[in-house]
Length: 382
Ligand SMILES: Cc1cc2nc3c(=O)[nH]c(=O)nc-3n(C[C@H](O)[C@H](O)[C@H](O)COP(=O)(O)OP(=O)(O)OC[C@H]3O[C@@H](n4cnc5c(N)ncnc54)[C@H](O)[C@@H]3O)c2cc1C
Image (tube, rainbow, N blue to C red; front, side):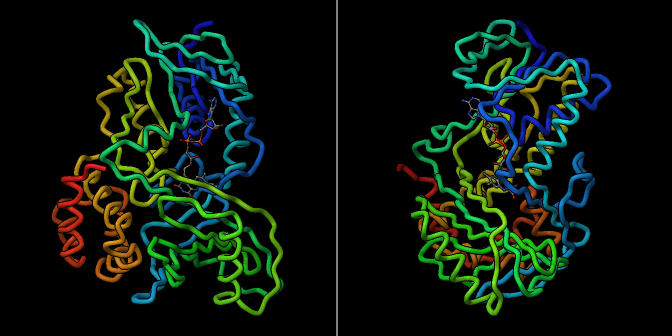
């Protein structure tokens, strides 16, 4: 069987892209095959991201905030995000929203099982799926592969987190204000913080997050969340409604969206996870727009630029600072938010600032750890 496009892996990146294709007058008749090893019928993740622009998924925004708290021992402030908003989409809502679209499109087929291999060919690409070879003009590959992140000479940290959706007995949350990063907890030589993402006075996602090389024992995440309740959200009983656990790679290894002449890597595999923060969702949406434009205009997909080189350098430097504990992450983020307008910081994290603004941000950091990190990064051997 031959297809126009095959999606090897249809999670966040694959489903959000196929949705745009199915809605596009030029692409909606393309013959598409979606492959995944899992039926996406659970709320296995919650996507949060900031944006000032509409997205294709605004209908399923679960909650949004105009203000967020940043908290650390040295700097605490309630930040007004305007013109941005911080938004939340539940994984299951996106999966169901896209499924509804797919069911109406007779040109899209879905199959469940394991993709064993994606290979570039002479005139198209091959996918080995459950032992069967299927071909396509173009394959979008989002199948995770840890080896891509752990390359010699590059930094590789993991962002690992455990979140509880809780319902409290007393109205202790302000649903208008999220907590973007609460760094008041013990850092233990790593970057450790909490997100609080309230959806009502009684309900919130409370998430313990770490940037480090190794995962913790299961109970350690739970102990930390309980500890946080005791110290910062006391005097209320609570019930756990849902839980999430995730690991996001934070790596400066070169991840190319080009998997071959007829293979395009997308999502985390395609380098859309920001190495220094783990944020991916909005980058995936931006990547989708560029892909759709290139397909419609029949442009060379390999020529699309997804990340500017200098931002890769900044990410690598920040990973070096955190990995070798030269400067605490709470100090880096704290100084950014303390010394710069929020809008500039968010544009910087979105890789949309000008070089002069980036110099201003660098100038607000203590120079020695950065020089140390730059030298080490330049000569990094392990
Ligand atoms: C719990 C969690 C919360 C997150 N929260 C945020 C957030 O708030 N904001 C943000 O910006 N980013 C977040 N991320 C990071 C990122 O946005 C997500 O990981 C996102 O889903 C990445 O999309 P993807 O398509 O690259 O990977 P995935 O969504 O993981 O999709 C990959 C797909 O490949 C399938 N697959 C794997 N191996 C095979 C195989 N051999 N054969 C067939 N199929 C296979 C999987 O079943 C999966 O469906 C989060 C990640 C996790 C895990």
